[in-house]
Length: 376
Image (cartoon, rainbow, N blue to C red):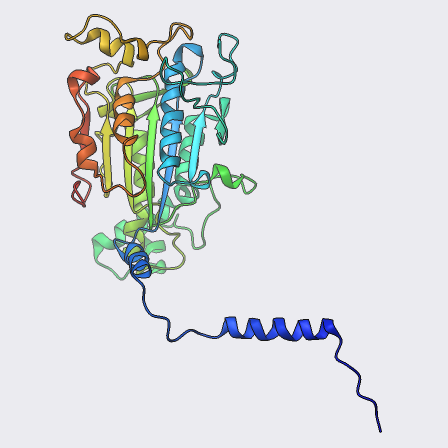
C-alpha cells in the first residue's frame, strides 16, 4: 500500500496565496456607489479637465533682480502647496541668487525682511537653469512637437473654408507641404521628462512670467526678447489642434491639443500689452500694469503710496540690500496664501482683491476668450 506523504509547508503557502489572489480578482458586482466615488466621477467627467500644470518663468538674472527670482519661487511654492506636483511643474530660473557672493544668507532666497520662509529650501526642482532660460527653449517646451504641424493645420483651415470633405488627400492637394505622417518633435528625443510639457486636451495650464519688459516685449536675461506676437504665435500653435481635430473628426494622426484652459499671468512693466494680441480660445490673461505704466517692487510701491511716507520694515531687507518681491506678485500671494486645496475661492475673488493704489499700477484682466464664468 503506497505511503501518503505530507504536503510541504511551502506548497500550502502557495495554494493559500493563489486562492487569495483569485478572491481579490473577482468582480465586486455588489459594491455600492459611495459619495466619495460619485464626487471623483463627477470631477473627471465635468468639463473634460483631468490634470493641472504650471510653467513658471523668471526671465531675469543678476543680483539686482533678486525680486524676480523670489517672485517665481514664491509662485512655485504656492502651486505646489495647492496640489500641483513637481512632475507637473516646469520651473525656468537663472538660479544665480542663492549662492551669489553678495548674499549675506548663502543658499537662501526670501520674499520679506522677516525671513520666516526660505523659498530656496528643500525640494526645489529647477528644470531649466541659467543660460538654458531662453526664448527658444521656452517656445520649444510649450509647443513640443506641434510647431512642425503648422503646414498640416494650414491645410485643415483651407479645407474647412472650401467646405470640402476633411480627408488627408484633400488637404495634401491644397497644401502639398502637409505631412502624411506625424512629424518629428521640436525637442530632442533624449530631452528629460522634467523639461517636457506633457499636457493634452484635458490639461489646465498656469503660465507665470516675470522680468523686465515694455510695450509688447519681455526681456530674457538681457540677451534677447519675446514679444506679444511671439506669445500669440506660440499659443496659437497650441490652440490650432482644436480646429484640426474637429475638422478631421478626431483623426488619430493628429496629436492631441495641448490644453483645455489656460491662465496666463505676467508681472513686468506694461505687462498687459503682452496678451493684447492673443486670440486663442479658453485663455484667461492677467498682468501687473497697463500700457505706459511701470511695475514696482513692494518697497518702491509703498514709497509711492500717498498714504505713507516710508517703506514698512517687514518689506525692506537692508541686509540683502535689494528689493525682495514685486508688488503685483505680493498681493496675488497674499490672496493665495489664505486658501488651500479644499477652498472654493474663485478667480473672480482673486481679481476683485486687486487694489491699484496698493499695487501702484493698474492690473489688467482679459476674459473675452475665456468661456467659463469667473465666479465658477
